[in-house]
Image 1 (spheres, helix red, strand yellow):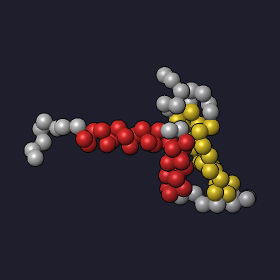
Image 2 (cartoon, helix red, strand yellow):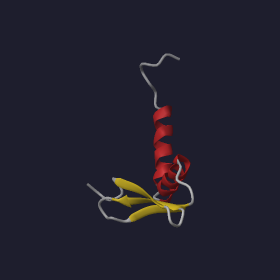
Image 3 (tube, helix red, strand yellow):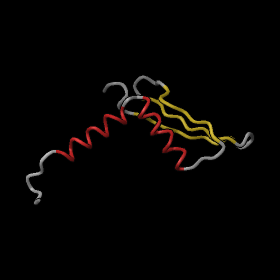
Length: 80
Protein backbone atom coordinates (compact mmCIF):
# COMPACT_ATOMS: atom_id res chain seq x y z
CA UNK A 1 0.00 0.00 0.00
CA UNK A 2 1.59 3.25 -1.13
CA UNK A 3 1.10 6.84 -0.31
CA UNK A 4 -1.69 8.95 -1.78
CA UNK A 5 -4.02 5.97 -2.26
CA UNK A 6 -6.23 6.00 0.81
CA UNK A 7 -7.54 9.22 2.23
CA UNK A 8 -9.70 9.77 5.27
CA UNK A 9 -11.71 12.85 6.04
CA UNK A 10 -13.41 14.37 9.02
CA UNK A 11 -15.49 17.38 9.84
CA UNK A 12 -16.00 19.19 13.11
CA UNK A 13 -18.22 22.06 14.12
CA UNK A 14 -17.17 24.62 16.71
CA UNK A 15 -20.34 26.23 17.98
CA UNK A 16 -18.69 28.83 20.15
CA UNK A 17 -16.94 30.47 17.20
CA UNK A 18 -19.59 29.44 14.64
CA UNK A 19 -17.09 27.73 12.37
CA UNK A 20 -16.69 24.31 10.86
CA UNK A 21 -13.61 22.58 9.55
CA UNK A 22 -13.12 19.77 7.05
CA UNK A 23 -9.82 17.91 6.83
CA UNK A 24 -8.49 15.28 4.39
CA UNK A 25 -5.51 13.19 5.51
CA UNK A 26 -3.43 10.54 3.70
CA UNK A 27 -3.63 7.35 5.78
CA UNK A 28 -0.11 6.11 5.01
CA UNK A 29 1.92 9.31 5.33
CA UNK A 30 -0.51 11.17 7.64
CA UNK A 31 0.04 14.16 5.37
CA UNK A 32 -2.76 16.73 5.42
CA UNK A 33 -4.00 16.69 1.84
CA UNK A 34 -6.37 19.59 2.39
CA UNK A 35 -8.52 21.43 4.87
CA UNK A 36 -11.27 24.01 4.80
CA UNK A 37 -12.35 26.35 7.57
CA UNK A 38 -15.85 27.60 6.86
CA UNK A 39 -18.87 29.28 8.41
CA UNK A 40 -21.19 26.67 6.93
CA UNK A 41 -20.94 22.90 6.62
CA UNK A 42 -22.67 21.78 3.46
CA UNK A 43 -22.29 19.07 0.88
CA UNK A 44 -21.07 21.71 -1.58
CA UNK A 45 -18.26 22.75 0.77
CA UNK A 46 -17.11 19.11 1.07
CA UNK A 47 -17.26 18.62 -2.70
CA UNK A 48 -15.20 21.77 -3.29
CA UNK A 49 -12.59 20.60 -0.79
CA UNK A 50 -12.27 17.18 -2.42
CA UNK A 51 -12.10 18.66 -5.93
CA UNK A 52 -9.39 21.05 -4.78
CA UNK A 53 -7.44 18.24 -3.06
CA UNK A 54 -7.66 15.99 -6.13
CA UNK A 55 -6.46 18.81 -8.35
CA UNK A 56 -3.61 19.75 -5.96
CA UNK A 57 -2.42 16.13 -5.93
CA UNK A 58 -2.58 15.89 -9.73
CA UNK A 59 -5.25 13.21 -9.60
CA UNK A 60 -8.19 15.06 -11.11
CA UNK A 61 -6.58 15.46 -14.53
CA UNK A 62 -5.44 11.82 -14.54
CA UNK A 63 -8.93 10.67 -13.70
CA UNK A 64 -10.45 12.74 -16.51
CA UNK A 65 -7.85 11.42 -18.98
CA UNK A 66 -8.63 7.82 -17.97
CA UNK A 67 -12.36 8.45 -18.43
CA UNK A 68 -11.72 9.95 -21.87
CA UNK A 69 -9.57 6.95 -22.82
CA UNK A 70 -12.32 4.53 -21.75
CA UNK A 71 -14.87 6.42 -23.84
CA UNK A 72 -12.65 6.35 -26.92
CA UNK A 73 -11.89 2.60 -26.70
CA UNK A 74 -13.85 0.50 -29.16
CA UNK A 75 -16.62 -1.48 -27.53
CA UNK A 76 -17.17 -4.77 -29.43
CA UNK A 77 -20.63 -5.28 -27.91
CA UNK A 78 -21.86 -1.85 -28.91
CA UNK A 79 -23.88 -1.40 -32.08
CA UNK A 80 -23.18 1.73 -34.05
